[in-house]
Image 1 (cartoon, helix red, strand yellow):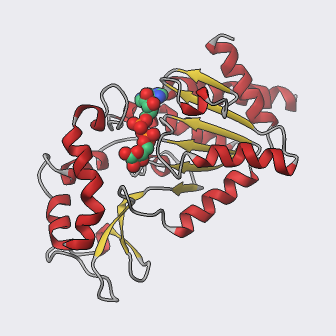
Image 2: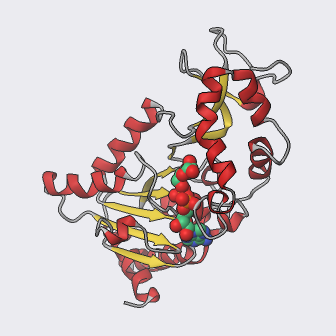
Length: 272
Ligand code: APR
């Protein structure tokens, strides 16, 4: 099938679904000038040292929270500058298309690996931030989350009311997914009858388990018509393993608005 035919198919599948969810990764934000990690110009693709440092970040926080903060707030050369860049980003047509599908009553939830907050900025209301957000800090001891603006960074590390050191509410490598987000995401994967997967290499777990849960659960619960659709610049393990029904290969910022537009056309036609 041509890309145009696949877009029409995806729009039809979405309109006919009862409970669609979207799973997104860094690829949906590259058209907002937020680099991805493993794409051709990804951060990990181009800077292996940065990737190695990222794998040590959670351990650094546990060992020496002050050193963690000094690294996080450092110049462009360290992660801190990256967060400042992300904060300047604006949503792109891919984010807006998912927000529109939610407003049309089709998309019930977006579960994103992205920490850039661009889905909410685009107007999506039900967003689960699977890897957290740069806009919040979190206490590992009592589980409190605070907006970055609420906490002074004069003295490092910033501390929670309970006395423990706070960290960014961003899930670093080797850190577990916060239970509330993990549980909420699994509930969505088990409840849905369509998964729209946008801009992820689908190689990081446990997030990459979510489409498999939807696929596997469908066999058990008789929801055998669960559709799993990928929109990505390149095939992923989900494509190769047949977890997804089809891949629409292209830019999310171009493909998703066409799916939303076709979905709107089909919905209006049905109402006539
Ligand atoms: N349109 C469609 N696909 C795109 C676009 C685009 N405009 N730009 C990039 N892509 C694709 C890339 O080809 C790649 O397959 O999006 C995918 C992005 O994959 P990753 O860079 O691995 O990002 P992601 O899957 O979100 O990474 C998961 O890894 O480093 C951790 O915590 C980090 O949340 C991140 C996790």
